[in-house]
Amino acid sequence: MELREYLKHKVLLFDGAMGTYFRAVHPEYPGKCELANCTAPEQVTAVHKAYLESGARAIKTNTFAANTHALECSFDRVRTVIRAGWKLAQEAAEPYRAFVFADIGPITDADGEYEKIVDEFLALGAQNFLFETFSDDDDLYGLAAYIKARCPEAFLITSFAVTPDGFTRKGLSARAVLARAAECPLIDAAGFNCVSGPNHLLAQARANASLFGKERPGAEPAMLSVMPNAGYPTIVDGRTFFENRAGYFAARMVEIVAAGAKIIGGCCGTTPEHIRLTAEALNEEEIKPVASKEQPAAVPRNVRNRLADKFRAGKRVIAVELDPPADARLDRFMAGARALKQAGVDAVTIADCPIARARADSSMLAAKLHRELDIDPIPHMTCRDRNINATKALLLGLSAEDVHNVLVVTGDPIPSAERDEVKGVFSFNSAVLAGYIRELGEQGITAPFRVYGALNVNAANFEVELRRAKRKQEQGVAAFLTQPVFTSRAFENLIRAHEELDSDILGGVIPIVSYRNALYMNNEVAGIEISQGVIKRYEGLDREAAEDLAVDLSVQLAQRMEPYTAGWYFITPFQRVGLITRILRELRGGKEANG
Image (cartoon, rainbow, N blue to C red; front, side):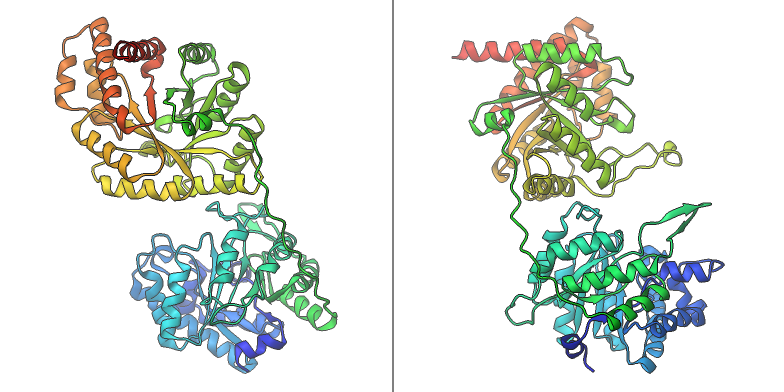
């Protein structure tokens, strides 16, 4: 029977996990299980047959990680793995008249490799494709068009990995990615797999079932697919285990079908026993559909953001960065912030472990500044040190503390000598983080944040930097803080950014306090470029003369940037707050004299 016809009458039950089950029954196998297509084909076939004997009517090829990045090999080797995996699955499925799906997992920096993999499967005769465990949908619609152009009768399932609270690791909400997939006429089914257990994916099925079954131009209504993990893993002696509660899993799968799923199966930790009990439950029980309820529209919270109000009013904004201390003594930091407030500064920005060195947490300091000094802080938030769970926890805390401004940055890499001991996370980048923060606010999970981004006007290839800025802007970045502007090229880039970006820009100014400081910043601080002419002016100056020059240059730079910016972003060198307040007095004095 043709797949679409089958699905009109029955629920399609997939197999369970290949990877975790293969590893459980063959712990001695030395490599990734996809390689076993070539080196241990009998063992792969045995897994396929175990699931088919248990009642699965669709199986996945053992090719989830068959790509050059995951297998660390040439594409010629990947091609061999794909061909062997397809042959094994086809031969195993044929006696059972089961459907075979070409299984394709996410690829880091794919650069055309998805298409090469698809071409291999199409050449083998594949018509059914499963793109599973994706964290975003950036590549999926182009791939769907690519496949349907070559094989119009192809059946495509796209499956996203979401956490129990309904977000992918890239920070996208389950409902948002699912809605786009369900609306796309090139995609036949969409849903979830991996990361979450059956109870949490049951909740997601119930919450999102209303997206499916709707008429689509040129295509049948999309179907919901759900393939949970067996549950949540435990680690014993360094090995990951899923406790086998197959009966519980089967009962939840029946509820998932009642919620509207037409395609079900299992992911990590599931075994043939999970599929056998699920098949029996589907056959034995009368499944009564549960009417899906349209999810109420999220209601964003209404909070006042003084800083956002000032930007909207067209008033110039002054933000000053204070480095967090490297110990728990906060007296100097708090005194500096207090002096800046008295000097009329609108916001204090706080770096998040700059240059990948541990310092007092920027978000906790931001909460303290807001609570004790009634200052509007802008804590920096990097993608280097936290996964999506830790980031969400921090944002919830900031929202509870009425801190509604954050600056998102990818973060400086950890110095190479420490990488064996300290690991960066980098699960997402600043543009993705900005979109995640926006989503949390739109759904009312947090109060809305005004999100700021970094703009490097000193970038060697400003074309690329500007494209990144526009991407951040699309994701919700409302304003940019630039790197310090010292050179003519940096000014030209600033003017171009002013012309092409719709966001507010705060022009970066960092006072140079000595000849040595100028050399250091120019040669060792990423994103800062100082002209040789400026460096030479500091040569031979004592501290007092160097500070006078720093004030003069900073005022001149700030005034020159004024027509192209919504305000200034001053970076305090060596906690010398007095130098910043002096620059601000000179700026205001110049304005009064000119006025």
